[in-house]
Image (spheres, helix red, strand yellow):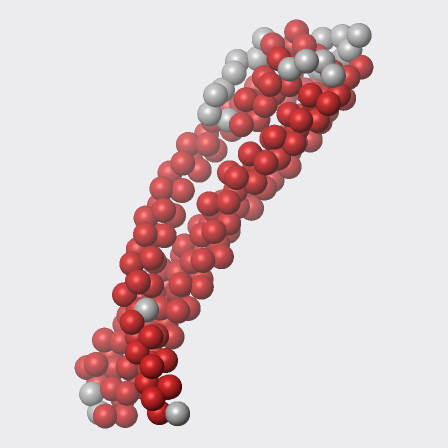
Length: 197
C-alpha cells in the first residue's frame, strides 16, 4: 500500500510544473481575450447603433434596399451573415442554412471563453492541492520555510485560476447575450425576406 501511495504522490507532485505552465498559458490567453473582446465591443456598439434605426424601419417592401445600404463590417459575424442572407438564393432552405451556419459560428466563437471559464478554476484547484502535500510534510518536519514556499505557490495558483475563470465567464455571458440578440435580428430579417415577392 505504501508503494501505491508513493507512486500517487510522485505523479501528483510531477504534475505541478505542467499545471503552472498551463496556468501561465491560459492567463496569457485570457489577456488576449480581453483585448479582442474590447475591440469587438467597440465595433458592436457602433454597428448596433447603426442597425437599431434600420431594424425599426424594416418592412417587406424595403428590407433588401435598407439592408444593402448598411455599411458592412467584416469583423462582426452578425454583419457577415446579414450580408449572406441578402446574397443567397431567395428560398427557405438557403435562409435556414445561413441561420444554422451562424449558430455554429457563434458556438465556435464562444468556445475559447467557455474553455477558460471551466479550465481556469480546475487548474487553479490542482495548483492549490498539489503543493499542499509537501507543505504538510514541511510542517510535520518543522521546515517552516518549505511550508511557506509551498503555500505561496498554492495561493498564487488559486488566484490566477479564478481570475482566468472569471474572465472567461464574463466574456462568455456577454457574447451569449450578443449572439441571442443577433439571431433574433437575423430571424426577423429572414421572415421579412420570405414574404418579399
